[in-house]
Length: 321
Image (cartoon, rainbow, N blue to C red):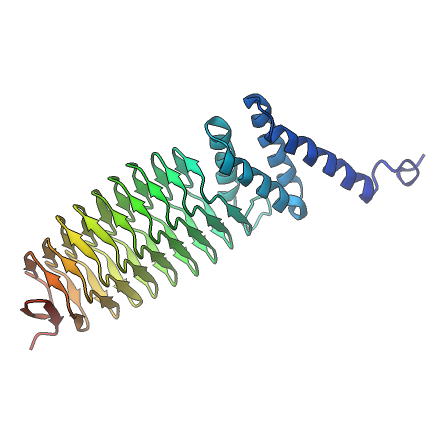
């Protein structure tokens, strides 16, 4: 008897079988028993792996679990998603190109290290993180990841060696309560890192060794009560570094050995009560800080191609005469 006669392997029968598998996995995700929920997570992941055309519904189901669950089920689900996003986007096995709605979730540690976010969007808006967040060696290419309004409760954000091209990573109005924010040796080429309105309550923000090429790093209106901001050794080649109206109190701003090649630097309206250290920095254009209030020392020893004039409420760095 042929498969056409039995109906066991026709497209409609396969679709019905997938629908049954999806329904069973969805029931498990909402089960009160933890073991059942864990079983449902892996069953839903297998369905998403099987066929790209049904993947979005599976992704949405796992994200819904993460938004509402806590503990091992939530951690397992975000780990499953992270593993699929580390796959090569060209081999068809990864979950790239989808939207992951994780807003308002509560997490302990989130590990997206090495994730390849090609055409992928992730929304962590308003989420609360009780421990570390790892974005180190991740790649954002044509997608965006948003932590707008998120709360980082004491853990570090590790984005070292991150690469952003044609996309952005956003932390607008986020709160960092005591942990360090590390973008050391990150590469931002045509993309953006956005911290507008963010608040850093202690800890250090590091962009040391970062390469900015025709991209944007924007801290407009950010507040740093007690923390340092360090761009030492960064190479800024085109694009913009926006520190407009920042409030830095009790910490220092460092540009030691930094190179500015065609980069717009905006410190207008900033209030910096600590020191600004630009020793051995190199400027290829005038950098104007209109309306900047500087309460500490401006150290430019060894810096090249600049002169300094300062008066209350205004600091201007421009070419040597």
